[in-house]
Image 1 (spheres, rainbow, N blue to C red):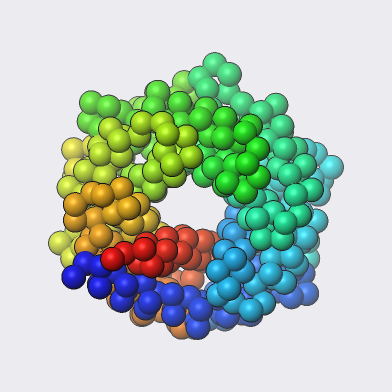
Image 2: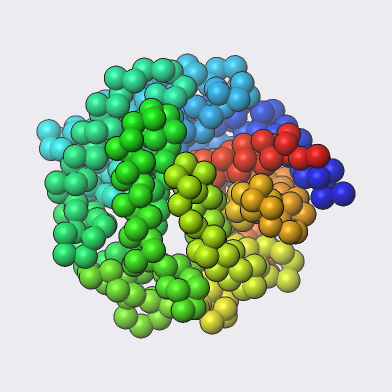
Length: 385
């Protein structure tokens, strides 16, 4: 029964992606004059033209359409990737003559925010990997290595390990999240190029996860840290995001497949904490909890649901009892509460604590999460008995 439900959910979401989402974000969500993706659409599916556009939006959308090209889900996907990648490099990489990638640019191409942000650099690397995998143009590896050299030289934190949040440096807490996406980018570059140096770097970040970010006694992943990568003072050091627990489960299983390293104790702890404390009574994943399981931020975003779906798909493949049925349930809830209520091809990106719509617009950055989850679900359904 679970396999049947999984196949039905996969077909529903795949159809939504092919017929609605990919056409929407390649038209209303894409500025053909500049080659840049829009930052946001209104709830009616119209472009929001005010304000700068972030590097992470360009990088995530390149990932999304590269995936669509590989899966043959959108006929113009490869052309979109080509144009958007060229624009991303032109507008965001060293536009001020300084190393690295700027955080955002205005519609006319002027720099909006010149910060060098670790989170954004991780996604630039993911976009480069996606571009190479889709087009076969391996010369782009040079840009990936230049980006990594900048991160190593300018953003490394030698006294604690890992990397600073951004340059210029600020007093904001350090986070595990940018490192998690750097881990993802390294795994992607390894998968794309089979260059061992990328897998070795993924191994270094895994070591940071096991030694700094993961707390074995409560069995949780911390979010916020001080300059020495110890849990941040006060409540910030006790915040847990079930969506990130789920995302790490999926990434750790990927790392396990590529390296044979033991990840089971970490996966078991993260999955169990999210299963016990991460959902509300309706089955929707909440945004934040505390280590003891109390719901700190009981609202709901689209992306934690997609990560819950990916985690359960990964665990179903690993043989965890009940994970396939849970994946089918999460997929149904994702469509019912977040995708179906939105403009066709869009989403209701935020629900309040009572599960009522609370979004003011549709951020383009969400498509990366949704398409990756649909891809994982679809491949799992195809393999299910």
